[in-house]
Image 1 (spheres, rainbow, N blue to C red):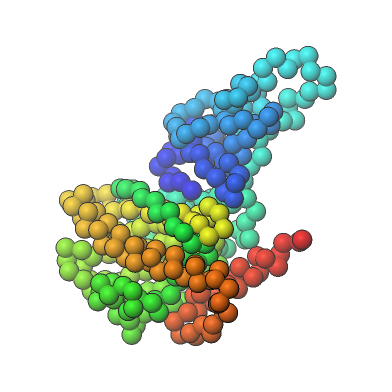
Image 2 (cartoon, helix red, strand yellow):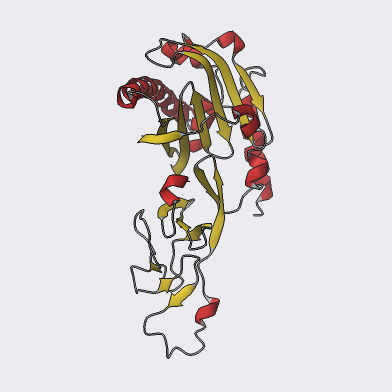
Length: 312
């Protein structure tokens, strides 16, 4: 939901949302990271409308109720004479929050601890990988497909030779491997490209349940969030990162983005067509390819598990 650098000091805050619940990520005076509900306990006003730095307190923009950075109510304007009003008992609810490799994650009701969800990723990345990477640029893509349709597409390289000819020339399709763990899957392939783009190395594509994507390529990284907007609509965010001491980052990013945008547009076009096919009334689920679509099956099993856990 945020980068740790945005929440470096007390009072630094970032606004966000999960499944319709407004959140306020904030660093409190003790240095603890919190994910407070950005909903005043009085009449649901917002404590913050935008990201900011160094706030001393959180003040509701509707009626001025004021909270400490840990969510405790400090002042309720003109409520001194309210019968039975107990200010110490009032505090903002909190979501779960975790910080990892410069990123901040939040969850309303996590399926597992964050440590369990990412177990094994650090070992695969290595100690130095991503060290010193800094944020460069952000992009959004609003897509006419369900969020699950987009993730289905991300989770397999089966389609790469058919809709991504430019990318296919860089990857080794014969050695394109998909590994699944309890809460994530990893696609990886040798990568060979012109030195003006990625050069040679390895492409690593992580899906982390439920909607985080990490694309790690030689000397750069992209992160994606796949955000449901409505049935049949989603938003995919792209953030680009480069080593802090990288040369000529702007021209490198221009080449990166031009290529990534080409691949993304190819995916978007196909996902929107597939979404229309899914809701057409014609489609009956087909057989998945065991070698190429095991990541899709893994995602579907996590979805089924989540659905079963909800009492109706």
